[in-house]
Image (cartoon, rainbow, N blue to C red; front, side, top):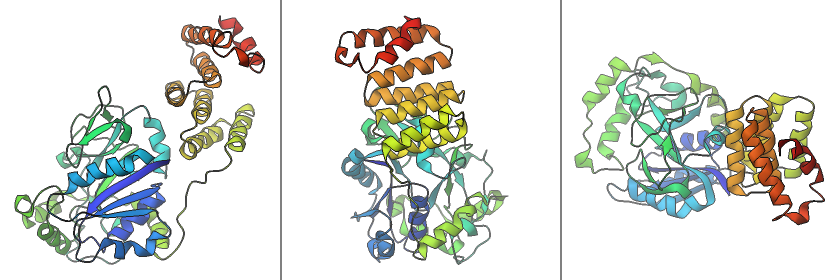
Length: 392
């Protein structure tokens, strides 16, 4: 099962979609699902040089206002085989700001049904015609973070908890499930308070004057051309507020260029699970807490379905003093499977967090399990029984 898939719908974005695909593959997207909305030159032809190195699935979906139909199809067809599914446009680039891999950041949001990422609107930076090279290097002027346009979000969702797309920005979720921003603030709609300490969405909406005129002519994926209200006056207005220099994303340009020139795409290697766990346990025993925590994050990306991976991550976080995150990791472990081992890990994390009362409750439950439901495991779990005795 993949950890992260990204979806877009595009029409006649042939000159820019290769950069979008290469960039997001480098940021950890394991599959890209592209809906071709009737491009004059099929997007599958444009993306063919990347297809052998990047997992790209292309669906043809011509016709006006097809964006939500594409999203619904993607949820049904590709949602079951991915843990996270992000819905963005070809002029939008997800920029994780602490990690280089989007998957590592998403491990902190496993308990939620979706993560809403605020736009950061970028302007033309004075370009009248399409500049040569990469847009992440060329368009370097953005709106201030506090500008109203940056209250928009785009969503990266847990498909298992989504019932339907409601707009290009937000989704309906199963009862009791919801989308949050990077601070854990619930986002019931397509907007929210602007936060971008962890992640932002660079939105190259305007590009050059010539490209913006073509965008107006092309129309939008979620409405007919007649409903598209933008005009060239909007392009002139962005010149007055997209004035803040921002080149942070440009650090990724050399790697993107290398992929576009035929180079390989770096990927998280799914190594031997037992060996990786032993390595992290050894680092914890030696007090190498930062390295153990970093490796545990990669472990849950590569082996996301493994309950034991999340238990070990919880222990690494607890040893690093990050107790709330540790308990979230243990919750993720228990959602996958309830075993003697991850229950014991929960006891240890609760002790480290200073919650002796809850540790005692869990220890008593574990003692009962090993003398009843899992009695056949008593022999091999003797050390666990001995360690939890003081908590009974």
